[in-house]
Length: 200
Image (cartoon, rainbow, N blue to C red):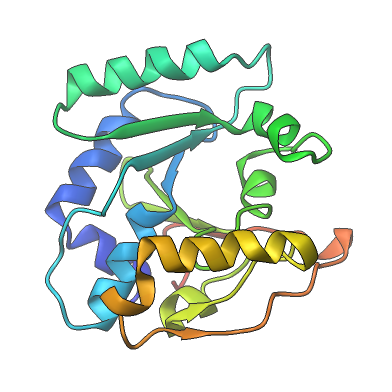
C-alpha cells in the first residue's frame, strides 16, 4: 500500500494532520515516528495505532526563530487537540544546535536527521496527504534502518543508541539494518515531495 494511503486510512493521524494544517504555519509537516511507525506497523500486518512518544511537528519560519514561539504553537495545538504529546520545532533554528550551516527549508533540515526512514513527513494540503521525503522512501517502505548521510563516523553512535533505546528491532522484527547513506552532492539535494497526482 502506498504511504499516502496508509496515512489517509488512519483516523488518528488524519485528525492530527488537519489540526496542524489549520494553523497555517509555513512549510509545516508532521514527521519522524508519526510516519515511520505507521509504515512499519503496516509492514508487520498491524492495525493503525498512535505513534509511540511525541508527535514531531516541524516547520520553517526564517524570521527571528525563537524556541518560545514553538512552545506557544504547542499550547495552541494542545488547546485544539488535547491528549497528544505535541513537539514543535522551527527547523530554521536547528542548524545551530546541530553544528550545521543554516538550513534552507524543512526538507533541507530533514536531510540532517539520524535515519533515512525517520526523515519522512506528511501534511494535509486541503485535499490529500502530501509526503516529504528528502532522503527517499525506499528504506522506510522496505523496513530498513539506515543512518542518514550526516550520521557517519563519530555520529554513528547516536543512531546505534536510538536503535537500542527505542527498541525498534524488538517491536518490528522484520526490520533490517543497513550501512549509512552516502552524503549526496549538493546538486543531488532535491526533496521528494509527493503531492496529488504523484505516485507514493
